[in-house]
Image 1 (cartoon, helix red, strand yellow):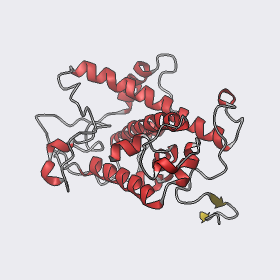
Image 2 (cartoon, rainbow, N blue to C red; image 1 turned 90 degrees about the vertical axis):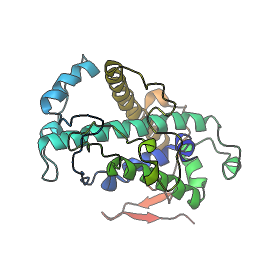
Image 3 (tube, rainbow, N blue to C red; image 1 turned 45 degrees about the horizontal axis):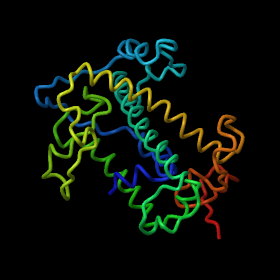
Image 4 (tube, rainbow, N blue to C red; image 1 turned 180 degrees about the vertical axis):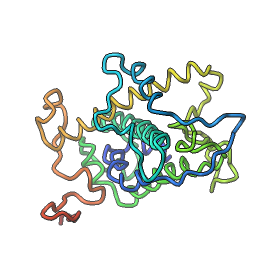
Length: 269
């Protein structure tokens, strides 16, 4: 039910990955590299990024004005930093795609028929999040936290994305069922095994499409939230998005006091 809740969760829940960025973007503790199923760990380089860029967008090509692809974060090598950035982009693109779809679904009044969802009548997804009880919010947050932990711990022995592993890879639950608190019947990637026999070429092409769709979804969901918070800020969405007077970056509060540099949530009475 966690997966279903995430898909239909308000965009605030999806945007939570950005709100919790100090947690998500701490340098991961990369485990030692292991060869799994005969695979060979390989670190991507700046040259690989420049080679991949035209495949993603032949018009723009390689575009990195901040020179992030040349940096070294937290005393890691440039190749390890590239692995971190690649994994982050794919992960946040996936979250944004779920958020984009979830926003549209909930803005049209589609929701679960049971409590507490059946008592929420507003068509503004951010307001729907505000009306959820804290217990429901914590379920979503802890569910996302578990998925984050699972993608980092690599109990299946696969190489970490900062140590030559594949960026975007999430270990299947079915690989180590004895390590789970209870059985999880469906994997995050390809739960119904539609791509089980797909060629490596087809999988590589699918990953390029996923990156492009994720980039577009990140722009899309932020456009939705910007128009809701500041009506008219996104001309193409003017009149289509219900205005929102709360704070999308405060998951348990509706306003924030910005009078000082400190983050001071202020709960409305």
